Length: 392
Ligand SMILES: C[S@@+](CC[C@H](N)C(=O)[O-])C[C@H]1O[C@@H](n2cnc3c(N)ncnc32)[C@H](O)[C@@H]1O
Image (cartoon, rainbow, N blue to C red; front, side, top):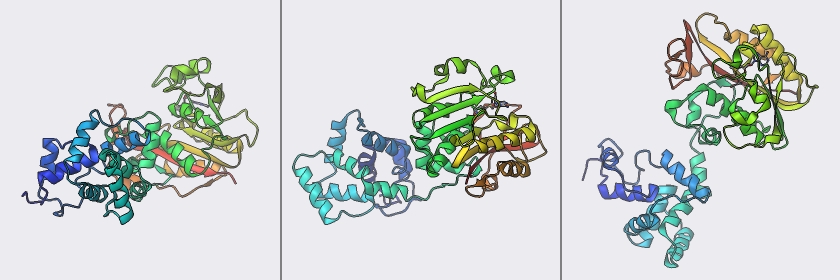
């Protein structure tokens, strides 16, 4: 018996039950490390919260096949022992409790009637009870904050990130996908991500999230100057070709008739007051002619909102160091928000990088390095700030 009290059989049984496969030799050795808890019932290292188990649960929920050889899984689950023991182990592993009498009876009858053991695992894994257990893991739900690594621990947020077709791998953590996902997360939490909503993006370029929104809300209007340096530099965000052919930048199929692109200066929006449920701008207003241009844009974005509408902003926030072109010092950020005349939905958490250790990406040296949450230009370190404001 290894020092942890976990024998190889217990570990393998649990791997089969949760992941439908045997533990690899590396996993087995890892799980047998002596410093884990001694009791067998404490779940094994990370498998319940693993990306692999989440992927299985998603596939089960969507009715997709989960295992290449379901028969082999069934044989391994059958080898775990008699039905009552299997049911008890399945409950303890997945729901973290012993089976109640009703549950035990129900599943015993199902197994006696020929139900597959894998289907019982599936039923428990996608049950409301497991879902509640999963959702009771404390998670960060802040909306107004500096680009926050904690969001990569929030499954609800990660589901939105994945639905954009973007990677959830923390090694490619980047403030751009953060901005897209946080925009959607915030709008959903604030009740404005509705299928009858109208969204305006300012300095939109051909950003990924526009196409996602086109599939989920009534109207998306993307505005941008589509001229000057942005036409050919960096990621060609200002490529005017998108005006004629939006499909060329579509990351996935989208509802063409819900998305329009318009050439327009964010400082002078050609829309009537109260037109949109949401006006947003991601990493753009810092390029609109300094503080004055950005402040004028904030006023315009507020003006075109309906009462109750949400203004969502991501821009460059200096964490430390001297002023740098196309970034804002914290006091300027607050002045910009004030210029909108709207109220923040909550105070901005500006202390994120007092909690997190982060190595800024040197934009002059290797701008494509990841993770990419904080960046440096000379002595100035900055990141994205995300703010949500409501029009009353
Ligand atoms: C860094 S890009 C961001 C694009 C997009 N929001 C994204 O996240 O991919 C900045 C964009 O602002 C646009 N832009 C610059 N000045 C503008 C102005 N006065 N009004 C509207 N858009 C402007 C540029 O053409 C460019 O597409």
